[in-house]
Image 1 (cartoon, helix red, strand yellow):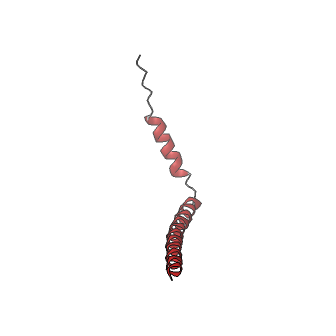
Image 2 (tube, helix red, strand yellow):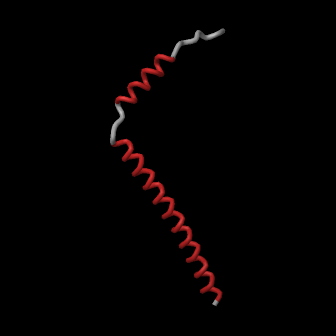
Image 3 (cartoon, helix red, strand yellow):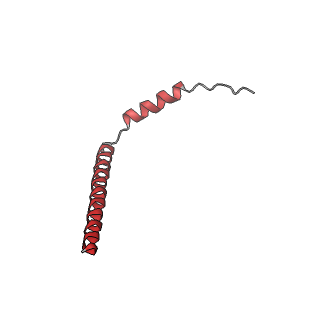
Length: 65
């Protein structure tokens, strides 16, 4: 059975028009701050891994002595 085609072009146009007129100014700030926090968390995670490896190396060296 074939399903009837539903014209949806007018729906897409209506959605685009409404989103153009109702952009909230705070959304850019939220997006930017969440991106900065994600970058900061990534750097902290890398540093934590580095220091964990350094501590393990020092512990192995001290046990060898």
